[in-house]
Length: 329
Image (cartoon, rainbow, N blue to C red):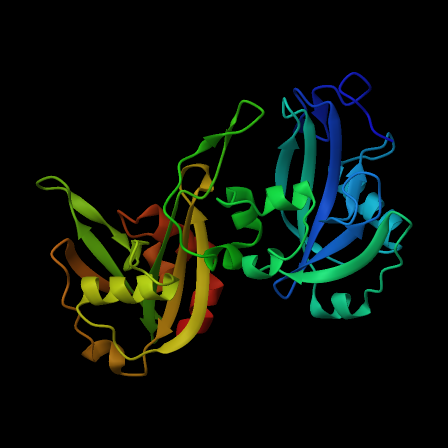
């Protein structure tokens, strides 16, 4: 059952603004090991297209997430256990009056292995599709799926799947575009990468030169924005380390952390963690670029109290202190 704007949810539904909405629904974007669960429809509209489990709201639904779960259970017989990592709002129709919220859910390997769908008559098949764009190009996608994965990527999808979003093909920065509801819709404006070197419980930060006389710069992770010559984000980080520190010391790869920050969370920055061998920290002497004033080795727990911390570095140190401690102990 579907409720229109004059039939119940009016301007608010589960705490969500419903202004201008005439049709409302929700679905699940279930992701497991870089694959998304899609269902092939059997219906008059969008027949054979691969879409998401989900559907329109009903009176008994307490929230849009309840709508998505109920519809998914009706369509697949059961729903694998998942943890919600974000939600992406989509709008369709001539006046953007059709709203469909997509809840991104992380499905663990055990839950995926135990999941056996029992499809209803509305669907022909269920399959886990690789999230890589080259693989999905071969699928006849439902408009909602196409909208969620459309380029440029939305900031909401990047927040829900940060590591996947960071690895998408590098593109020119894009500007914010107006959404159909009359509000600004946030797309990823800028991507970049850097290297955080650490060792013996310390991390390396650099301070920029102030823009004006007698003005100090801010402390940050060595890094840079993507430019047209970068093959991938690892190349961005390597370029930044060489230009800003003079050389990249030998270090062990400890993984990466993706930070989403800035106005409207429209910037994505991948920080590669590199651990120096015992004793190597004292022998590494960076030759700083002219736009950098100094470098400093500091314990992550103490860096938060340093004055002039760049917002990205502050967010990294505050939200990922445990990961940094594990990587650099």
